[in-house]
Picture 1 (cartoon, each protein chain N blue to C red):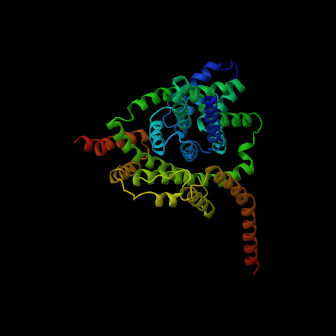
Picture 2 (tube, each protein chain N blue to C red):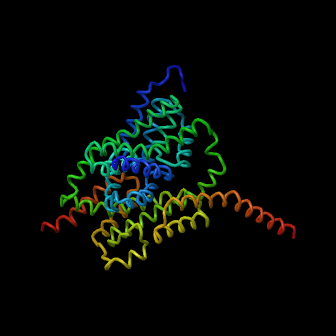
Length: 211
Length: 199
């Protein structure tokens, strides 16, 4: 019974994520951060790690993350429950796109030329950019300053509640190198940047622990 | 497009399975592969169909890959076509992540893996930041676009406001701006110009 509720929750939350992501891919991160992290299904660090994993594995990000969250949430009760959880979450995230496109393909030929739709998008596009920038900002202060914002906090209450911020210089250096690299080699696949950052992480964070 | 012999559902499935399996990162990385498979090889859709699909995918919620698969599948074999194509594009990611997630749990606590991820996190911040720059290019480059970027950033970054109301609010503002404010501004401008010319 409890398990059934978890499956329903996985389906419902990922349906919501699929329904409110316009632009796909990274536009999904703010919604996932809000919904999945707030459910305590994964931490912000888990999410960041998984973005890197999703960049290095086949398939759309939305499917990757839905499958992964479904497995870790359902998987607490066993392997098969994990697979079922993944199915519920993945079907949830796919269904809004599927139904909407099916309706458009069938009934509305003029959808993309509809003046209300295109006007709404003039507002939605910049808002989505702002939302992703906000996600980048919160993730950055977590990675570089160690400040995490709880679901019931905002930036100010979180900053006052934390005991002293510490700048993670090694992470900041890796971030600066990655940024310079991505500006220099714009066409290069992100997977190479991730591998490079992993090597630097081993060098900066792993080696000092064994030496 | 030749409709002499209908494409089998299997062909549709395998084509989209291939598309799902060979796209890393998803989204726009998928478009060249879809073009090769659905336009050049199978002749299911044309170049202008593809542009239409991208425009529709951008203006509807959801995942670009799924939107495209559903749309192409429907064009080729109606409902069952869309179902089979969508299933095909989703399945590779589903299988790979299912297997991988058990491996991730095994190695996460390893000292070297943990250190590697410390470095990777810094790079992911850069990846997201680059996505912001890239997407910002597709916005209105005027006071309206810049204000909306700034306000939605501040509302969520500083106040941790929920995301959905911000998106819905922006949609309403977009409609008000394009359909009500812009025509009025243009009319006022024209009146102003005529007045100047009259003098």
